[in-house]
Length: 166
Image (cartoon, rainbow, N blue to C red):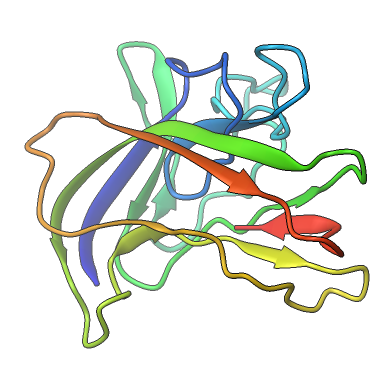
């Protein structure tokens, strides 16, 4: 996969959403509207003013946090990169909704059909091992022509899952 994918979060704070390569937030069904599973999923909080959104990893190869019109977003430029996060899942939670926006440019599919610009997630058990099923993956190729594309998908949390990594 080659190309650029940009994510931003300010626009979608009122739904459940995890953020991987994009801007976003995670909330839960049964939680109050606007509750989010992902702290600072919109990338806007930076209490120490170090240009790294609070709770997110420092920039590295191909990872940055630019701002556009006052809105900070996660930018991943290049293939096989991520800004790995893990969310502890409350045992009372049964489902969540991913919402966000993505902008991408010149993304070319790799050798495998799943090698795209994507938000890949994995449920894990208490020992850190994979829990089936694999969640649906937001994946794109091509370009969004400078436009932010909406992401909106609901997920059931499988029995035995205690965390969600993305």
